[in-house]
Structures are given as C-alpha cells and as structure tokens.
Length: 296
Image 1 (spheres, rainbow, N blue to C red):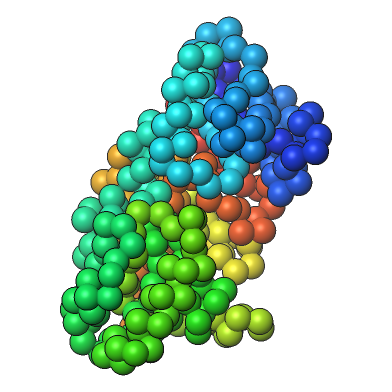
Image 2 (cartoon, rainbow, N blue to C red; image 1 turned 180 degrees about the vertical axis):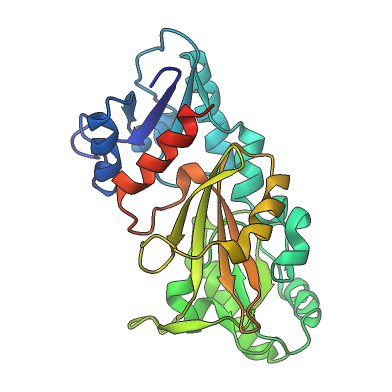
C-alpha cells in the first residue's frame, strides 16, 4: 500500500519478531504485503534508540503498540520524522485523545461528569472534589487509565459522601499506580449502565459496551468490548460518533456504553494507535481499515 506503513513493537528477546500480543496483526499485514516496521520499545524508552531504516520518501506511519506517555510520543514522532516517517497523529493530537482532560470539554454533555487534579492531590484537594458529587457513586482513575480490575479496592467509590472510604480508595489508587500515574487524579460519576454480569475475579461490573475505531473521522470497526465480536446494531449510537468528529485526530477510538435508560454515553476516548482490538479478529479489523485507507 503506497504511502502508508505500520510500526509495531518487537519481541523483547528477538528484535526480528513482533511482540507476541501484536503478532496476529503484524502477520496479517505482512500477508497483505503492507509495509511494516519493528522497533524496540524498551530501547526507545531507555535512551531514545530507534533502529529503523530511513524511508525513501515521506511515509505516513500508524503505530500499533503499547501505550506510551504523551512526552515519549513527541520524542518518537520527531525521531521518526527525521527518518522520513510521519506518524498518523501529531503529538498534540495524540495527547488530546490520550488524556481525559484534553477531550472532556468537547464531549462533556455526553459523558460522565468528571473533575481532576494537576498532579498527585493532597487530602484537602480530594475532599474538595468529592463534595461536587454529593453522595453519588464515582470511579477513580488518572488521565489515561483506571485500575478497574481492582474494582472494590482502587477504583469504585459507592458513595462520595463516605469520606473515609473514598479517601482510602483514592490513596490505594495513587500508591498502586506509582510512577505510572499520568497527569493527576480524575474522579468520574459512575453512570448506571446496562450490565452483562461481573468479572469472575475482580467482581468488576461488565457493561454493554462497544469500542469504535475511526480513521479520519470515518468509523470502520464496531467491536463488542467484552467479546471482540462485531457489533451488529449500530444505528442507535451514530449521533455520538458524529459528535466525536470534533476531535482533532486522524485515528482514534470511542468507547461507549448503554445506560439503564437506553441512551448511550461516551465512556472513554483513546488514540487508535494504542487502543486494543479487544479480541477482535485481526483479519476483520485490518480488512476494514485498509478499505477506508484505500478510499483516500
């Protein structure tokens, strides 16, 4: 495919092979004769080492790999540009979809009420934010991730007015995130959603949720979040997808869930380069992605 290529993280022990979690994606693109590149994320994060042969001309590059910080993404963007590659999203575009405070203002009317801190908050700052929610249930996360698989210990607060419990859960979250905490602490109202059940280990509630991938504002993959299967009914949430065209991004994801009222809400926005396929078949996903790219 002329003018576009894909960049994957390599295996830690064998730099000629893709990371095992991305092998299916990599192998499918190789089968389709799409240009693919590998790089060592570990080497890059250690000292900005980037061993990639220069492109013969400016090539648009889509990264498919593990999450990196907005700062690391900026360094990677510049290093690749010097070798003749332009990542599909510029650094500020990556940050907008990667950090909740950057996209929240654009979509606030269609997502859970959220407040956040700049950096790790002290107890008084947390108390001030808790008051905003009265006694509503809330969840704790940072600008990028929650600890949802530690649902009852470091994520979910049943009532914001239960100060002792709320402070403990925030404290647990911060301490367990350690150096991985991004930006600050985010408190989000917990929306009553249509549930499919509970996770067998963490007891985290599993909601009726869909992940949608968009390429240049064109949705091409509708994935049922917890099964990876293709979502068959998509007409009822097309309005939310249109709202997300406000995002300044060329490749992004929208996670939406159906509320108990039947209405759909935006749960999360992400950069498409670091969003998982949720067990979606790589052939199905890339078959649709390559179609929309070819239509450019």
